[in-house]
Image (cartoon, rainbow, N blue to C red):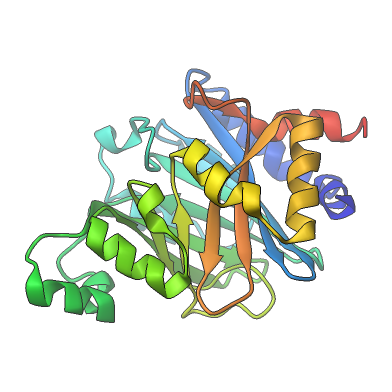
Length: 285
C-alpha cells in the first residue's frame, strides 16, 4: 500500500495521468482505465496504469503520452487498424491503449497496445501447441486479431509482447493445464508471449489472463487466494476506492501473479474511470 502511494506521488506518474486524462475527455462516453499489479510471494513487484482510447489519436496526443523513445513503432502499428477497430467491445480490447509501468525500485517504462488482424505468417503459427492443434484441426483457435504491446524503457529500448485471445474450448483447456489453472470458467483467455515488467522477466515469458465471467472467477480463484499480500491489497483497493479485483493472470513456471483493478460494479463497462478516482482519494488515506 505504501508503494502504491509512493508511485502515485511520482512526478512521472502525475504527468502521465494528466496527459491521458486530457485525451480521455475528448471521448467522455467511452472512458476505460484501471491499474494492474504484479505480485510475487514476497510482495508487489510492479504497478501498471492503463488507459484505453476509442477514438483516433492526433499527433500531439500521441507525442504527449509517448514519454520515452520514438513514436515510429506506434505509427507503424496504427497503420494496421481501420476506423471500426476503435469501436468499444465489452470482451476484448479495441482502439489504442497507453500504459505506464513502475516497478518496486521505481524504474519505469511506457507502452502502447493495439489489436490488428492476425496475419498468416504470424509467430503464433510456429508455437508448439499451435502446430499440434493443426495436426487434428483446421480452424483458427483464437480471435482473428492479436494484441501487440510495445514496451519502451527510459533508454528508449523496445520490447514487444503478443496477446492471443484463445476461444477454442479444447485448446484453451490444454493451455490451462500447463498453468494448472481451470480455464473452462471463462469463454476466452488472453495468452501472452513476451517480456513482462518485473525483476527476472525475459522475452520468453508466457502468461495467461482469465477474462470476463467476473463472478465465476471471483468465487473460484480470487476468493480463494492464499497470498497474504494479494488478499490485503484486494481489501485495501475495495475499501478505499471501490475497486474490484478482476482478470487474474498467471505466469508459467514462475511465482508471479498479476491482477487488475477497476472501480464500480462493471455494470456499464464503457465508463470505467478508475485512476483519477484513486489519485483523488489516495491523498486522504
